[in-house]
Image 1: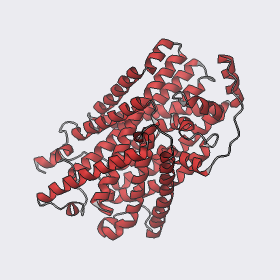
Image 2: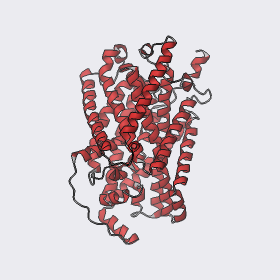
Image 3: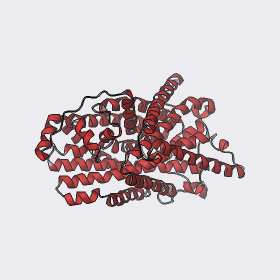
Length: 496
């Protein structure tokens, strides 16, 4: 191997446990502690049906995860979704699909960083530190702390995947332990307990909820947002260039992560709504950012409340290193194929990490933080993530269908679902359900009464895709001038 090879070679150092932790920690943070609560603001008509909407979202998520498992078994490389779509569909669709994903996930990293601060605010409230809690809620302070949290984890990722794995797994275990306390506590108490506790503490009487009919559009819109609980399996695919025994471990880790998160998230969400009336959540969510542990604080001793809020903060912090790994490896894979400047794929000799790609991803995530601050609402970032990931997953299902026709040699390496009929059924049903989710999500966004076009996630996403298209054709023309055909580049998998 010559010097140039060593500069661009990722190290296969992440085992099965690290891959599962990557997927789980990319999913379980905001997806259990914030989104199932604040969805009452985003989809006001969902009411008491959050758990049912969550259960429905598991179906297309499982189909998308199976598609990823199929493709990862045959193409275990860094930048999974880009490699899959570019080799199975076309280099343009591969780049656009993965750029959509990169943008959505990077913005989500910023949103999660922005959401962590209210958890520390809630701890201060429990401990009676009202002045400090008020300071943490102040806009500029929250902005600064969010950026500090984000770049601390960028620095962690720059240390290399060995430190990354050693940090992620223990934090994941802490997250499960303290999250289990929330589940047990939620099922030990009921609505009447909560109503009494709120009245005793504040004198506020929670009114009986108004009975309203849930429209199918509200149900599907909520399911599309709750679908983001499962996007973490994509992070496993992006780590394909650093996984040990990737043909076996990548599909296995995807399946394990989806099953673990599906069961835990469902129990967590059901426990919260078992203890707290949805009408109270819906009312308070309109004026403040709520957290699941913060709500249970009315029912639990202060010490236990602080513990579960810390557990929730750990869960959100866990999202950051796994998602940063994911988005940086997408940029690495583009650079390896020459679609963006090749210097972005340069590997740091000491850490084995694509330093420039990681830093650039951190910069995009910072935009997500600033956007949440300026908009005074993080759900724009969540909506952008939903649009981006649904588009990406539709392309992944399509890639499963087209791969045997476009590249039979790679298709023959698939080891998940040996029956072509089974793989075809998974892909087709996935396309139908994911397209339905996307259509409802876009319809809901376009019909929202917002003050400016840039608060509509659909318009922001279309603008970003236009920019991605310009980047693609500019870089491809530069390759062509050098005598390099992008179609020839993507006819084979990237080198190890």
